[in-house]
Length: 175
Image (cartoon, rainbow, N blue to C red; front, side):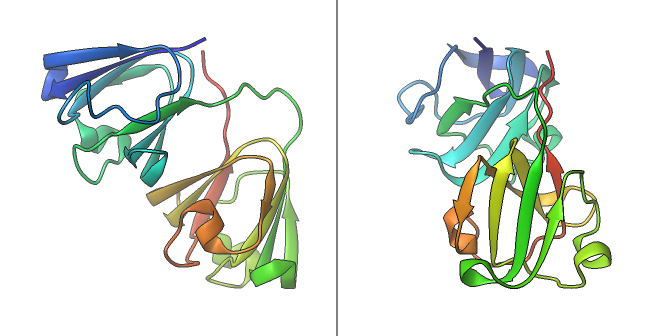
């Protein structure tokens, strides 16, 4: 169970909305989102309804403006709780679509994809264990992509508009 509070204005001001479960369309509850309090759980927030657009992973804490969660703007239109995971982590990344080309398997975070993989792009991947977050830039910066266990045959399967991934890490759950 989780609890998150969205505020229309910065510094936890203005109209607020409290949420305790996933919601595919938050637009009826607030117009914009400029600050957030995560009271419990780990949340994936999405820029658009139906879990589309920019993605952000937030754990327990206070975020007084959208830049603190690496937001690109004040639009949050859907959210879901990230399931708790206490087991192992394993991801396979591939140089080409459909799990072709050079492949590497990881069990740990990777702050610099090019240094380890020798390619700038990841075209497909298989998440065998755990939950992972891809970042467009090295050192966990830039646009984020949340990956659940499963197969992603092309980069648009995880919501990306291009295959550029600079870093990735395991999603740890904070309480």
